Length: 361
Image (cartoon, rainbow, N blue to C red; front, top):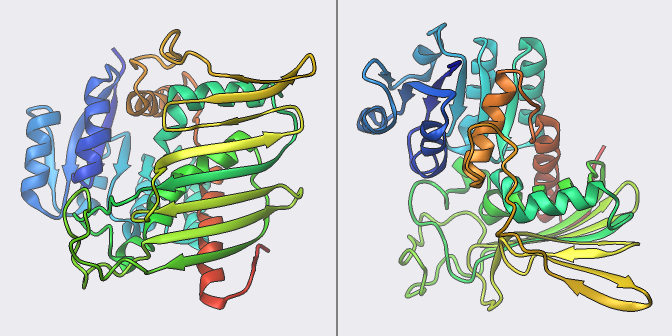
């Protein structure tokens, strides 16, 4: 059986929670190298997901020297995404980089340039596209079910669920807070459904209202008030070049009851759709002069169109990457699409800094 030899760079939470289990389950994946700045993490990853011959590293550049490795997974802090991805592409490896693509648009462009120069594949870890509700909604959107989509909402709001581990709340290492962490998923879904990647301008506002609170009621326990330098909430209004508008809402901690994460709402001139919660979908239209709301059954007839996947988003994402490397399909998340997400997020942050609309050149 043909296999893709994979090197894993970064063996922390997202690696153990998503990528390594998915590739272990894929019959065409073989993880042969693990790298982490904490040696014990790499050793544990080898034990849990590797082969007896797998190698471990603390320096990713040493891993990249192994010419037998076909592809790498870049699963590090956001601040490391760009230079590790560029080095991996220059070393002749295909790359799956976790979201967000980069800290800013300039970094994203460097990654695309390295991809083009190397001739290798580059994709970004937006696994929410592979959910059953997302796959079905995209199929309808591409079939012109909604017509011209001119208004949309991208939502990723938690009531009190600030990630207190790793460097999530460190603005410098992450590039921001909930906007770049979970807002990025909602925005990616929304742009994908609209098939619109040409922003004109945006207005953004971020808040640090809850960072210093104690006795927070947070899902994962109270956060470190000194370490919490990222925003706790961020909101944006985006206008696309064709006149379409997007409202982006993101928060780790908001006094808001109707919390929902990585969902989209789209309105077109033929109909609309929204996700009341992750994994749920409602369609609205007018039929025979009557307003109609339908809720498709997403538990039957799952979309299992990637070889070697069982229908779970993480498995479909991994299978899509592997199949593309093997020439059995195309990437579902392109670097250009992910770069546009990063570009808009950067615009919202810049608008906050200047207090003015940010215009995309």
